Image (cartoon, rainbow, N blue to C red):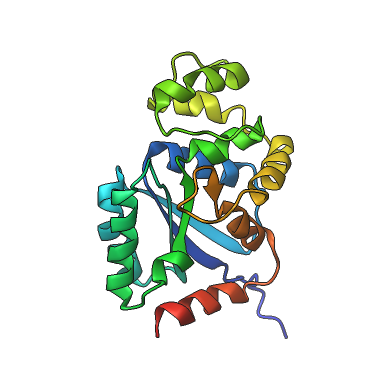
Length: 210
């Protein structure tokens, strides 16, 4: 006989270490829109800068509360020194040469490359907010964008379920080589977050635990 207690389903707990407020607020908006499969319980951590990512990643991974820990950051401009440093430290932490390739979601040259795909097919050439401000004003009405928290929140109001689908298609068409300006691997992770098959989590962890 049933014991009368409701069945509790264990969702897959995934933590994403976000480089800064732009990444954090963007993924918070996508969570709010409920565009990903409900089996994934995704928590977000704002690292407050790319220099803090490796330590935050290691702390969260060693905490053991999550099935998987991912990173969401940008590459900045060439030679991508800080981005390469993040990858190197993640690789060293796991003792696996390509560990970072499994867990780092990137936008080259910046995360706005991904966010802007909600409204335009144009590729950004520079991570500089001054350079990208006119495009952001054109599509969101936010003037003189400098990445302030209030500006980011205002931009996110223009991220919708409808243009999410457009973004997915556009981002999926980007090359996934992180050394190429105008690239991103976010499309791969979108498909995983949307899908029913969660075996990819185990596959990634198997690579990290070699």
